[in-house]
Amino acid sequence: MMSDPDKIKLKMNSQQMKKVEKCEGLDEGTFAFLNWMNCKSFIGDDYELNPPMILKNIDLPKITRAKLYDRYLGKDIIVDIIDNVPQCKNCSSDDCSHVGFIICLIQLIEREGLGSMDELTK
Image 1 (cartoon, one colour):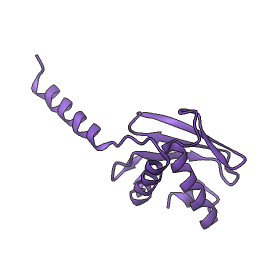
Image 2: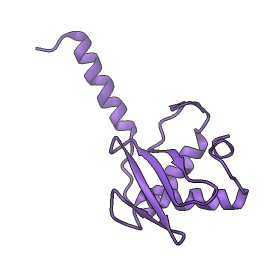
Image 3: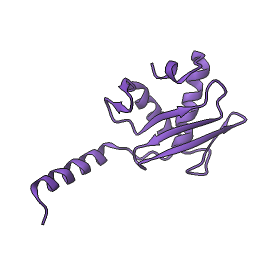
């Protein structure tokens, strides 16, 4: 039998899991990117909102690899960029949501002329 604190923890975890969206295609990756952009005011990894994906790192200024955290999967995702084409190592795909997120990110970096993670996360 569960104690009251354990029941509360279980309820909180299930509520938090409902907030996390599963992203599967390029369009979902675009929406995840926009969600991340709208809530990227943070200190360290403490985001005010709960975006489905978070940028952890990207090689700048020459973009060859990016690392995302996928909240639905609960793990870091590596996306390699080879000849300007993102390829997700997790999904072994070039049309998953992780790639959609990275395509939007690359467009932002190129449009704004960003050269560091600090500039990107302002």
